[in-house]
Image 1: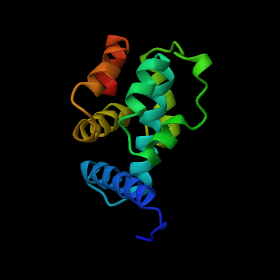
Image 2: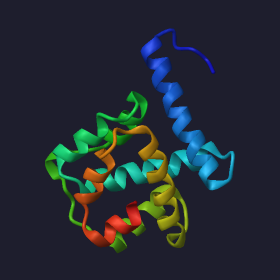
Image 3: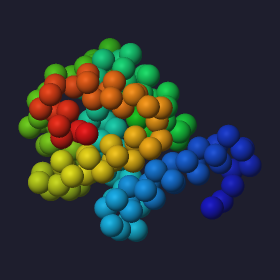
Image 4: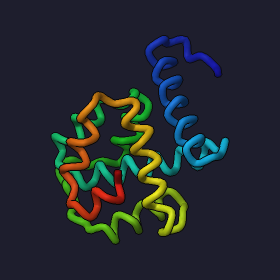
Length: 139
């Protein structure tokens, strides 16, 4: 892995790579591009549905590089965006480039990896901010 020469950034890149590797492994593949697409889709689908304070609390737990992915294109004055389970699935599938039928499994896999890396209870706070039907898919 190339070094940036900035230890804090190198650490963040290493941590992001750990997340991607674990997500790819959960999928049973070495495809890091798939892992990134799914992680990014999951982060954005959650972020846009959350109140800004909950989103910010969760983002603070992410490695700096993934925090940038999380906040990419975010407009805190427009959240939470009220959409239902069907819209969650549609958005996630489109952004991750997966079939609608794969969204529930993909979301669960990413949530499983996230639980390993964020402080206990933070992901539960995020999930409890979602409607119950969406929570079942996102977790």
